[in-house]
Length: 479
Image 1 (cartoon, rainbow, N blue to C red):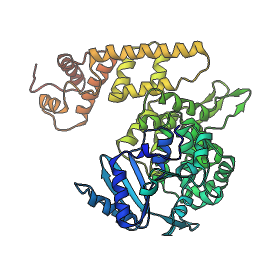
Image 2: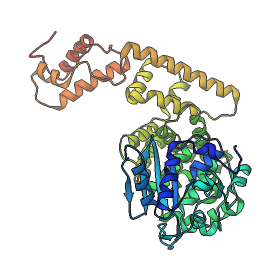
Image 3: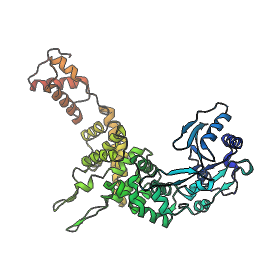
Image 4: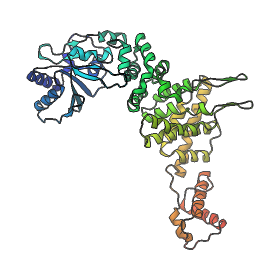
């Protein structure tokens, strides 16, 4: 971590000198504030955007900066928010006038009026985000840190500049942001702040699903998302956002029989999968893969606890979650549904003798997502028994090898039938009818079972036999 009172070295990009010149011409003060400052001090090169606060009009400062840049980049103005944005050297730069805010109970949108730099720093969410570097000629690069954010960075603590109870009640999204920053930075949330989040958890209901999901996504994309989800659970936020997940934290015992805690198991699976993929939607699949277990849980004396059909029900629940949180209802949702629905298939195969037909069906159903499915299932191995852990992973190696062999021979990934419905209609002089579907399905099943190869000639001969059983004879034979 870099500690200094002046940070000229952070401001070497030409844009900062241009902003200094523009601010001088407009006779306003300008500062770079927030994430850029925090990440520079932490030596995290992660941000591709910069926030500039002007003690005056942020829009006027943005327009003046554009004038001073040779190619005059376009300035996007958002009058309702008093902000403006331009792009310079692949960096998004947002300008805002210093302001103070007051909030109404039913909304996170504040009433805004012009303010000083101190007013603007007061309204920031956390002390580590309230630090600023001066862009003014007389003290260029000086750190302005009224809430001792530097100490919070050193101590790795998330705390609010003002009373956390007011901060979180005013803008409940800050509760999610506190947990997200704690997860991203491996920081601890100050005790008073954590208690205030718990107290104000119910206020999250006024936040839109889109904003909540934006923070959930950032938590899921961290190195160890379980940290964030445990904080969400501890504060009561998770039960309000994803009750399907917290329902898994209910272990029952009947006649001495218990089952594993599927909530903590799920968090282990999510952390496991993060080692092997940065795919957001595969991580969502890991998070939701067992949500069908709570509503399908049953006990019987013969088999103990069962969760029959939890994958199918879980895939249905995925759509309801995506709709409720205003998540994308497109191929991303369908991918998560598919992963959840198939999440036990490779596990079942790996526990038995790995047959060609089982592998063919797996590859046929998973298609191009078979590798993602196997990654999910391997992450699902959370046993602490090292002998079992090694055995299960070795079994998956066998499954992977079998997939390669079967795919090279039978080509069932993205399966296309050797004989199309149109050909069947032409050969037997048929109109669209049930018999065409029956013949096509029979050919597909024969290939998947290994009765015939995925080959036109073998499929043609098989088709003739099937058609004869249906009372059909070829009118226009091709072979």
